[in-house]
Amino acid sequence: MSAVGAVFSCSCLRSGLWLLKPGMQQMSSLHTAARCAVRDYYEVLVLGGGAGGISMSARMKRRVGAENVAVVEPSKTHYYQPLWTLVGGGAKQLAASARPTESLIPSGVEWIKSRVTAFNPDKNYVCLENDIKVSYKYLIIALGISLHYEKIKGLPEGFKHPKIGSNYSVQTVEKTWRALQDFNEGNAIFTFPNTPVKCAGAPQKIMYLADAYLRKTGKRSKANIIFNTSLGVIFGVKKYADALLEIIKDKNIVVNYKRNLIEVRADKQEAVFEKLDIPGETEIFQYEMLHVTPPMGPPAVLIDSPVSDASGWVDVDKETLQHKKYPNVFGIGDCTNLPTSKTAAAVAAQSGVLDKTISLVMKNKLPVKKYDGYTSCPLVTAYNKVILAEFDYNGQPLETFPIDQSKERRTMYHMKADMMPLLYWNALLKGYWGGPAPVRKMMHLSLK
Image 1 (cartoon, rainbow, N blue to C red):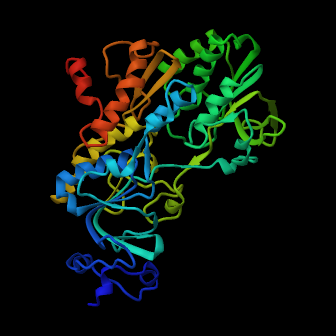
Image 2: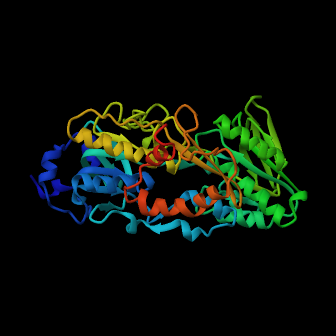
Image 3: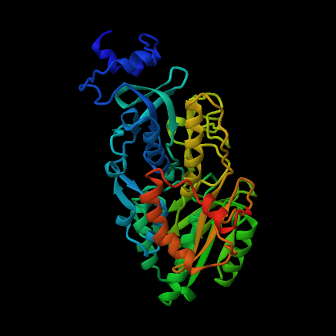
């Protein structure tokens, strides 16, 4: 076999001109520096360097050894995005949410600084940029979710104007805080799109912080705070929704349901919403401040891919996280079609289950550990208060502490602002935190 067989073109593979079996690729230890500095085969290949990808690479390192694991991730900086709610509200600095990706990749694990461009699960390889192909024995897909500001007419160019921000992007989160500081009087509008989103509570968390800030600065009486949501409810779990509706009433916030942002006229400070319950009818709102939660969807590479469902999400079993068609392929986090809220807390719980699933698959055994859909959303309702929502696939509360977590609590705020970041950096990303289930059992004396 020619030395160039160590790394070769995906375009050749797609045309069927040159195919190598994984065993042959594994035997080849040659590196072709002109094409790619990485090997052409790994026992475990992880796609994505977010929370799911990093945590699973740490766990897989312990399973098969660092030299047999690689992570594909193009970004040089990793962000703890749950902190951006507090950044947009002026309670935290953006820099506190950032770490170099290099510092988080487990020691000895290969970091492939590239993007995946195509999948071939039938032949056990993926294509990367520059027509590079990498084969695998096991594949973990952790590609996250994509933001689509461009699906709103007038964006993203509208962010050049003041008065508009968004806590969902590193480029726009600090604009939220500036828009809040510059607010004088008028409408402060907060939106929720007509698509799946990551951290479904975040679009209204910043609204509550805006209310608190405007009260603190004496501007609240001149502000009309409006939450325009595409949903028909304020929150998907009734216990927490009831609590939030009481808070909304107390804070004199206006909620308009079934409203989806479709256009921003930044020069006129106008936001156009479609009425989802009246097709074809729109409504224009003047704003002094606008916080945009963008439409979101699966990464482009997953759309119409062989590993995805009809909507573009990685098609996995909701209990084991194993792919429904390809038993050596697995998914975790926001890119999957798991029917639960897309949060870092969900990733933590999924990582523990997926670790057990893969370990059994590696031994040719059937997975037995089951993911119950656990997810968590710390609903920030003020600069010192949080409702800690925790629930499962059925939308039933699955609370860690033996107290009523639908009540606003200062302790939960400090957990959100101070403890959870430490847990994220020092436990989840190192593959040691699989969610609070053990703590829950201890707190409830094993009754749950």
